[in-house]
Length: 217
Image (tube, rainbow, N blue to C red; front, top):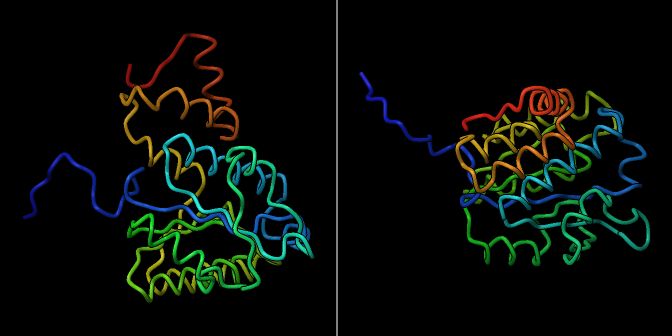
């Protein structure tokens, strides 16, 4: 019989144990994305970016052929990191760019969280490469997308088969907060959820406006 201990498991994400890489959230890539509505995609990408910034998670922004073909990174992401230039690549597989490897090594964390376009190319490539090199990989599937439902789903299945862990954008935010009694990040977490958390965010607005609710307080 195992013994229950009141502490989080080692596979859970926290602000100190992972690096976030946001890949190719660009107009040209979004035009052909059909597995998720572009409005929802942009909203979810904003949620992920704000969550990472609020919890001070080291975040790598990267684009492909920004000036010559694909266009700039979504403003919903760039506005959260206004002073951070995206690393622009020619490689479809982010992991093959030595500047990305150097940045990952400089940060020095064993868990990698990925989100981007397209799932079957720009996420599968670094996910499988990182797994092969001993990293733990998490994929935020609703801040990613592909040219069809089939392409996105098969890509996620392929990554999961080799050990990647899928999650959603709201799950990412709430997993970082994890305890509503964490007062230092509570207000920012709630503000992010209200701005980008869909129906959950509306529920927060209602509860706090109508009867001053506060989780864990």
